[in-house]
Each structure stands twice: as structure tokens, then as C-alpha cells.
Length: 320
Image (tube, rainbow, N blue to C red):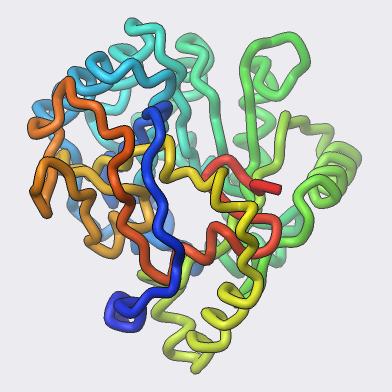
């Protein structure tokens, strides 16, 4: 694995600051049942990092103290963490919206037979990775057989009301480009996804989110191995648009790792670039309980151009 942080130390990215916190994004650990080529977390079945119950309770305490309106659960496969359901039900008891970043195949893992029903009962929004609408490209990026299981999972969710008008159960799909290029226009690609998946499988979803691949961890290492890292970084810098700076997710989102430490975004978390608050270079949930981070400077490096290039990119899809 090639480390990419040393290649990002000198940054030309503009300085930006935080606004009011709206979303707490929580990485519950790096354990996953898949090993995807584009994964910026380097998650997989052999990873052991996993959030404890104590840290999960600290997440809930912090969430309650901030007035944030959403909690965004990610991993790895967050559902494989033994405290995932506790975190979901505790957040819902606070009246907070819960988002589950789901890889779809997790529904067929041992012990997850009732997972879909649990998510529906708690009105959890599901945002699921499906990096293309063709079997060949999905299996190439995520592993053989993943496409078939993903379609089965979407049908399972549709059967519970997900993606259906008037159900209140939101289902989003996530597109990632194949290789070192930017995502195509989101609206047109969403129309293609809905038409092709609807005609072929009779499945439905609410929104497509196009997310740029970040030059870090597994994807960044692949770029270095292929001699494409510098070229991809040039593409990101040359495609930067100042108007996207206003909508980047780090302005209103705080990222929490499996140990309870804070970062300005999930990508910074994977690079070990911790959020700086109260004069500390390493900030834990316990350090900021009940404290306002609005106006705090955001730690930036050149990978941040991945969020401002072209139509822009965030965990909520395109910015433009």
C-alpha cells in the first residue's frame, strides 16, 4: 500500500471555515464483507477496528448536545458493528434523521437476516453503493457476484417500501467513476440508472449520488502503482470551481472515527488529519461536548480538490 499523504502535504486549496453543525458522520469501523477497488477507507474482512459501546454512547451524548439534525453511519460496513442498532435506535429517540451507508451485500451476511426490516421500522435512509448499472463494471470494481446480490438487496428494500413514492423510506444509490476521471453529470446519469434498472429488474430508488474517487488509501495507492497519481491530481486542480466551495460537506459535517476522534471529513480521517479545536491537534468527542465548532478553521490538503472539481462532489452527491 502506497501512502499518499506525503504527496499531499503542500496544498494550494483555499482556506475555509465551519458553519453550524448539521450532520455527524460516524465511521463505526473498518470491518467490511467486501474489498472494493475504489475504497478510500481500505476496509475489508481482515480489518479489526470496530467502535465500542462506550464510544457509541459518547457519540449519542455529543449528538444530543449539538442540535445536529442528522447522523450518517458509515464504515466499512457499519451494520457489522455490534452496536450499530443501538446507535440507530438512540439517534431516532432523539428525533434525529439516520443515514446508513450500505454496501447492499451486507443483507445476506449471517445474522443480518432481519436488517432490512430493522432499517424500515426505524425509518433509516439507505444510501447504497452501486457504482454502475452493468454487472461487468460493478463486479470489476467490487468483486465477482456483487452485482447480483446488490440487485437482490434493492428488490428486498423495494418490497418494504424503500424507493417507493409516499412510503417515507428513502433509498439513494451511489455512483463512483471507473478509474482516474471525474463523474459525469449527475442528473443525466440518474435518469439512465432509473430507466435501465427499472426496465431490466423493475426496481426503483429516489436519488443517484455521484461521488468522485479520492486519491487516498486503496484508490490512491492504485494510482501511484499505475503512475497516474500526478495526472489525476492535475485533473482535480484544473477542474476546480470556486463556486463549489460554499457547498462542501466539511462546512456543516463533523466526522468521527471508531475511537471517537474528530475530523473535518471522512477523507481527512483516512489520512489522519485530525480536526483542530481548543488549541488541540488531536480532538476527541469528550473535548468538545456541548461546544460550538462554528467558525473553526478546516484542515485542507490538495485531495480537497476532489470535492470542488467539475460539478463538485460530497457525500450528498454533486454540488452544482
